[in-house]
Image 1 (spheres, rainbow, N blue to C red):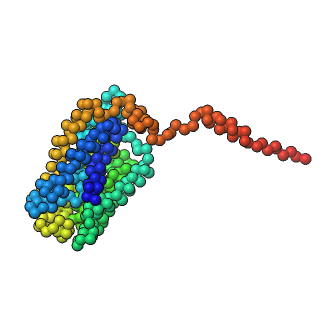
Image 2 (tube, rainbow, N blue to C red; image 1 turned 90 degrees about the horizontal axis):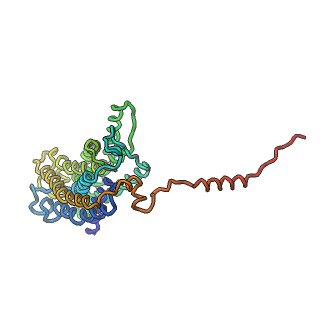
Image 3 (cartoon, rainbow, N blue to C red; image 1 turned 90 degrees about the vertical axis):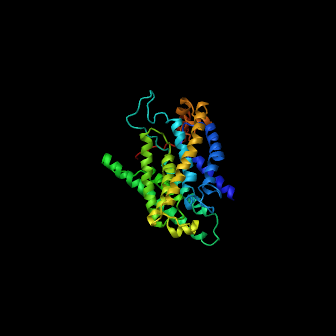
Length: 372
């Protein structure tokens, strides 16, 4: 069970990258970086934070700073690892054609947005992820029968729900206010709502077992703001993230880890991690837990960047990273996967003519009634 659990977490880190580099990344590159990330990069991160003798672990007799890093379900271990990898990949891969520059390489006055093919499926996918998070966060308790474990699991479910809802509302309404100030019109962006919910989920993942419900609400609200900040920052830096995975997972992975240093409640920390005497600064903590969280964030950024940057540069140098311009214009469904995902061609003109002829031959003409 433990292997399968970590297998699923490792796969999650890899899929974060796939969304960011969509529509221009070669399938071979996807296989290569997925192997590197899950086989070599992620295991080092997970062992350092969750392993019995990891240098940042909270699960040994002499943890760092007296408490170790508290990342209950992976805001840093999983989401930051995938998010920083996605950021590096997007920077090296470059933006999609027409996103920030025209065909001649001239900068566009405004970045071009590529609308989603189905907002309904986007909403469905978000709710599938939301439901899956109840395995992600409460499931990280790993057991239910020992004393106190059920309480931890239940708290994780409650805080997960609250943070997701708060992030959803925060991102959508903040974006609405910003849009109204710019244009004078009121509009509610469903994409902002969905990514805000995912941001709240990522933000609460580290501290879902140690924060109070009110803390989860605040973490979710700030997660929505963090998402908007990172999303706009990437556009300003002309880094093309097709699905805003970097703001959701990297930006809010950082926030989720840091938030534990502020919102970890003493009694809940004792239940989940033992009585080590270090907790959130909002509860009078000495700041050592916050320091451990910051060190964890810096370690994950440093390790992943050091390994994945030269790896992506090598893929790019070997011509294994990005598809050529013609393939990108045609679309990877056609150029890489033997056909479009959606057949929008419709019937041929010949088929239409045959249908119209067939319909006309089946018509029954009723003679007009004549007066006597």
